[in-house]
Length: 110
Image 1 (cartoon, rainbow, N blue to C red):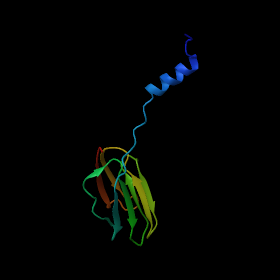
Image 2 (image 1 turned 180 degrees about the vertical axis):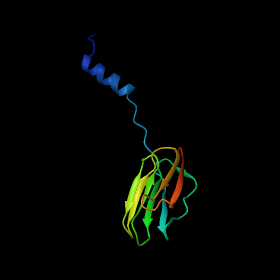
Image 3 (image 1 turned 45 degrees about the horizontal axis):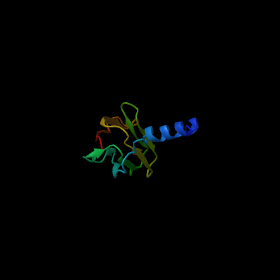
Image 4 (image 1 turned 90 degrees about the vertical axis):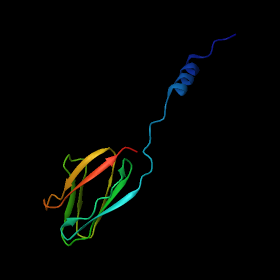
């Protein structure tokens, strides 16, 4: 009986030990509106994989900037932007142009 070819053994071994990379579950999209120089309510129950759609419904430019710099969305008046939540934790944010505009995203694991 002939021994299997070494390349075939290596391929078979790699196929048995390779594991697929974990994927983020498809999350929900939540809207946070900037209006009258304030952030609207931040949704509860945020999870990794969810998306925040920021909507600047004001007449001036705003940002949603995380204190840890993990996201920074800069929006002209009437514009929209998105942040994909990729990590669990507590993320305070502010508008860089209007420091009185503040909020906190609380993100749980999937």
